[in-house]
Image 1: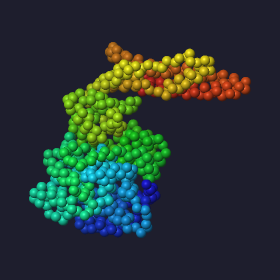
Image 2: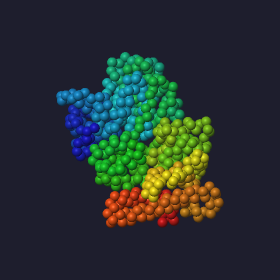
Image 3: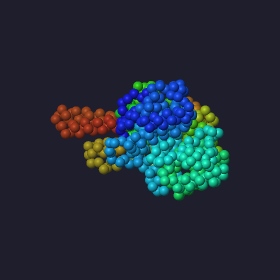
Image 4: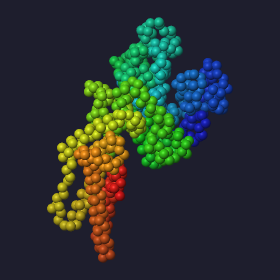
Length: 613
């Protein structure tokens, strides 16, 4: 991917090796203005764009207007954004094909990823789509949560086809066009044929055109979730879309259909290949930010990428905000926003829209998503399926798996190796929605019980056993010392022990259950101390801090002694012995430091001041 040219963005896109002029696009643009009976002056008034921007587009001096400019023009002219975008992208492709400078032929993925400078990191996805097409798949359903880049990928992919049939599904149910009207429009505009009054006959005419066409045809259906119910089926007013998809899935069709959706489709239609689109890799984020001249030589970018799940739309939003409001200072932005991932209004709207839609079409799945905000996903980054099922206390057991699958199909819960978790940005919104409700306490109660079962299983499997050192293996004091430090270094490598981590999670849920902020507050609640389980976990936390702190002090003293002996050896010119002594002291110091650091982090986690001091 080549870097962007260093030009100031004033409604024009800066792209690498792009034709500076595109008269064909200009003529198409002026033709559209004439059809809409809008002059360039009137368009300037409607959009608020500078007249020079509009003039350059109309004369072909601008090869590729920015997305913001295109959105303003599309709104002013009352046309679909896809119709307007296609004018420039198809013309640009033709300009590139007619260039006189011969170059080696590029692969499909190379051509597609070079169409727009903001289309990055999807080479593997394009390769997957190519493979599906080669295998004879007729319909590919690209599904993912909002902002991942489904529409962008699908739109770029279909630019290689000769003829494109588009269906941009309205987001509001009342504004959705019927399948009948869509097919009629396709027949009239794309195939110059009048539709029949009988829907079945109209479908057959479309089928024949798809079979007989000498052109490579692509069909794009965007935002399919608008016509799906909570079970992934078409809603009753629009069941005719099932028949449309069956025609598009016809084995004899010389077409490929790409569908984008936030939800999976579950209709009895053959030849549909679901493809879950994942977030962009951190390397892609880095490339994008570098092209925007934002320094990324910091660990902050990786943390941000993980927090937002590699979301493509979030990447672009963040880039714009950081450039405009933080003078391209990535670290300054993150310092202000890391405690509230949805502080930016655009990011908040993106996440909220997904929660609200889920609330409307699948209330059980919505409640589970909110309840999953009770887990921390920190020391223990994921939970087993039992950790999800225990939160479905009001859902019949026969329905529980369906609810979990509903979240998975919408990519709102992550799953790998039968372990589940929420991305931080989704978790943040889940907590906001769960905390004010009565279910906050119930969710923490169920979660504490879930972890307690895990704790019991660990105890029963004897994972609490500590390795016993056989000191008889040592033959000298020197050998004893090295045996000891080797053991201690192996000990601090395992900073966390399963029984401790689960115990900490149980205690966290107990604090939330009783609306307490820290362990000190709980100790002052005498009524709670009557509970033997609570007393046990309080003792676990104290012991987890104390054994590390005491061992840290002992190792430090041992190291100090070896340091003093090493100094004596050095003065007596016992160089080899002194070097060994200094190395041993350094090893002791590192072990001591790690143990003390972990002890303090546990104390700070539960705000236990007496142990911090």
